Amino acid sequence: MFEPLFLDSVLQEKIWGGKKLETVFGYPLTSEKTGEYWAISAHPHGVSTINNGEFKGMKLDELWKNHKELFGNAEGEVFPLLTKILDANDWLSVQVHPDDAYGKAHAGELGKTECWYILDAEPGSEIIYGHHAKTREELRNMIEAGRWDDLLTRVKVKTGDFFYVPSGTMHAIGSGILILETQQSSDTTYRVYDFDRVDDAGQARELHIEESIDVMKIPGTTEIVEEKVQQLGRSNLTTFVETEFFNVYKWEIQAPTDIETAADYSLVSIIEGRGTLEIEGQTWKIEKGNHFILPYQVNHVKVNGEFEAIVSTPGK
Image (cartoon, rainbow, N blue to C red):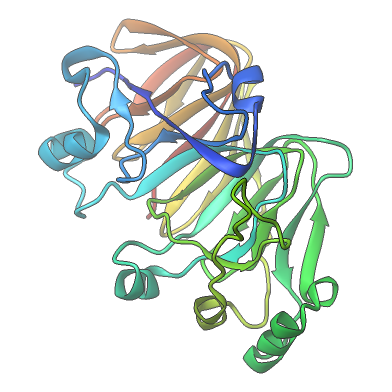
């Protein structure tokens, strides 16, 4: 099969969400607090649907289960990756995610290592990325005392920044930020602090202090990302990270460009512009807001136009 698998996907309402997923990407909202678009997902909390070709109408989890040939006969019961776009109209909770061992033992699913590409950030926007506790006892004492200014590491962000967030990393996305997130296929989150807010019914969201302390990386070091840029004529291909969980790249296309990939399959999200994708002499139009999978044996594509894409492949 030598055609991309385009996807229709699921919007998620969140207490911190807004309306940018419609104003920026054109996704039709049913709530003014829409926080996430699960753009490429086989997770049971929001499964994408194939919208073209032979498998039109099939859910991605079903495709993974019954047509492993499209994914290089990859092992694993669950599709391992998930691509989201998040609209942080307000702060997300301060949180941490477990690794695979803890996630499977306590939540019955994969752990959650993730990474963020900052699509847009209002002036002065910041994230929480790491913490200052030196021991688990100190971490507990600072959480119980509510010493958030002493505990949390705040980082200013701007459009185009990239952050790698392994499991065990204390983190939060700040207000005014639009993010594309590549992550393991997991929805397990342990909240440490939620800014004392309540929902429309006056209820505070659940915190998970013991689980957070269990899985938190001590000390709270963060990852330095060394980007590598490959020039192909007028186009640039940037490598952000290559890890055991996923590899993440950015395509900046300005002219006809031939791209080679040795991956079993690739997840592609068009984040700006429009253009065309050619495979084996067939051509598809692509534009901002499209998400698709390049299946197994699609190792060469020709792209044209002026667009940017975030691309991920399964880990090494």
